[in-house]
Image 1 (cartoon, rainbow, N blue to C red):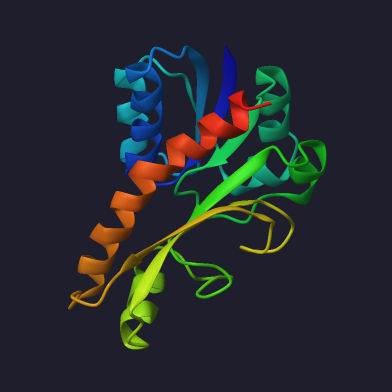
Image 2: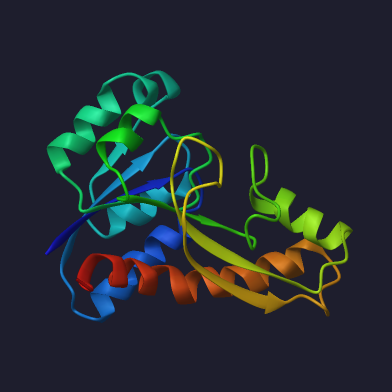
Length: 188
């Protein structure tokens, strides 16, 4: 059994998909969901699956409280699944190559501060890109600059709106994110 700490800020579709993926494969894991938004829909999704949730603010993240929660949980992997804040260097230093993030573009394109969610998809559309995709990468002290673990592209030629692009990217996220997590945790 592996321990996975899942950080999220919003709806939690990736968090729910990751947990469902392992449940469907009968791979027992222990989860902890950490959320910086007390109104995030991910909280309800986690509670429905009896997954413990820790809600925190920026002061708790940058102080010792979130680090203490992680140290007590002792995760095998920390997964940023729709988490929008910069991750603290102190936690990164304590968990080298154990923190991954998913980005909704093919890095290094459309990465960096402020490039998340619809902002990424709007930029892809505005630049008339023919493809975009996902990048799963290790987290370091810079936005979207950690070592790339996995990338997958998809055509966006027929996409007319950023919402169309978002739908294509979400299919990739739900298909590949849990598979990559499984490989990182169980392929030794």
